[in-house]
Length: 240
Image 1 (spheres, one colour):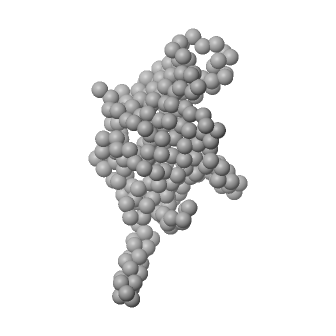
Image 2 (cartoon, one colour):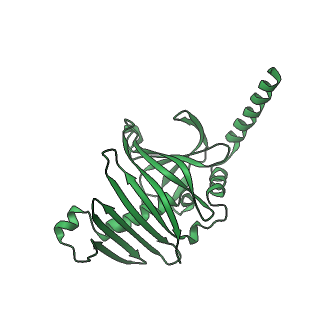
Image 3 (cartoon, helix red, strand yellow):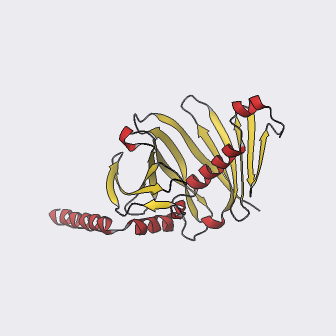
């Protein structure tokens, strides 16, 4: 029994040493190799079906169409019978409310509809569903030191990421399984000294071709662990 214990301690020591020696760029490359082994995110063409569930029982159903080669993005969201479609095709923006492009100013305000908002939604979905590959984008800065951190009882390899001001002001942390390099948690702060911002727990995987996307994202406030909502990738389709 003692011999097996010593072997286990030795192996853990090797793993810990390897974790301490890995560079930030190596960790990111390993994570990308796990999630996108064939390097296909840059030419992604598909439709994602996402259900957002809120603590009060509400749901939002979204169909997100992404065609990176054609620079086309479209999201159709249904909430309590209201259907909103936002399309960005290259530089052209189209907004529809319940099938109509004729939308009153009041409805535009009520439903937060604008081309600026549509572009925000495009960037939001491309970022979240393109992780960790999006951490290779211009304006992204990896902290040179890989940290080992325990989060919710599990030990991870953690990357700290900041951005050019023109890209984003938040500070992000990404948590990767130390063996598989799967991305399992990410977290952001607007002002880390105030413990604001949110953390997102990832579970399950949805294979979109050879890309492994997190299936479930559960969102919480950093400051009090309050649950904000959970989005689930229920289905994917390849575009024709």
